[in-house]
Length: 281
Image (cartoon, rainbow, N blue to C red; front, top):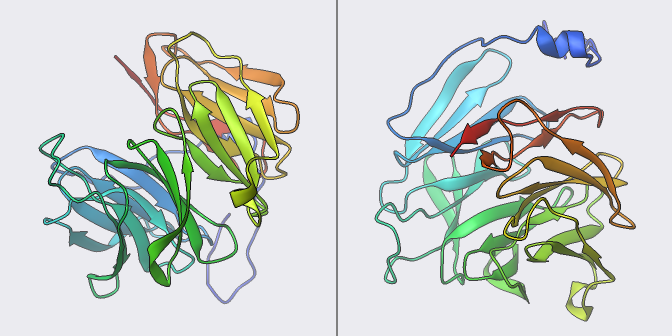
C-alpha cells in the first residue's frame, strides 16, 4: 500500500508478480549477530527484529527508519512477536552459551516505549522456539524444545494450559482465532478448538513429507483458513488442505532442495504468494 499522508485515504495496490519483482531495498541495517526473528505489527506500520547480539529493534515500515533499539543483555532475545500494541512485544530468552541447565528459558513481555519488562512468563524447561499470538485477544501460546506447548494470557505470568508433543512443536492460530494447530510428531499435526483445547484435538492430520527425518518446523494458515503452509527442517514448503490434510502444492526454488534449510515463510495478505529465504547447509 502507498501512504502519502496519515490523514489521507489509503491507496490500495494489488500484488502481482510484476509488483513483487519491482521491490528493492529502501535501507540497510547491520547487526553484530545474526537476525533470528522478524515480525510485523497488526497494521503493518512497524517491523520488529531480534538478533544474536541481544538487540531488539523497531522499524517504521513507511519511512524505512529505525525507531527504537534496546538490548536484552541479561536474557538475550529471540522469537520476537508483536502483541496487539505496536510498542509492546514478546520475546524469548536466548542462551548464547548453548545448553545450560541453570539458564531460565522464559518469555518476556517487553515495552519498547520505555525499555522495560512488563511481565515474564515462566514454565518452559528448555529453549522456547516459537511464539504465536492470538489474532484477536491477549492470549498466546509458546512451543519449546522441552516438547511442550503452553498457553498464556498477557495479564497473568502463569500458564493457563499445557499440551505435550513428541518433538519441538510447530504452532499456529488460524486467522480467525478459532483453531490452534500443533505438530505432535515430525509429520503429524493436531487441530484444536481454541475454546475447548483441553478436551483434545478434533482432528489429527498425517502429512506427507519429503523424507523420514524431515521434521515439521513452521505452520502458516492462508487468510481464508482453508489451507496451511508447512515448512520442514529440509526440503520445500508444502501447501495442505486444512480440512483433509491433502497435499495441494509444493513450492521449490533454486537451491531449495533436500539438503537446504528453509527460513520461516510468509504468505501474502491476499493468499496468492509465498515468500521465504533459504540457506544452504
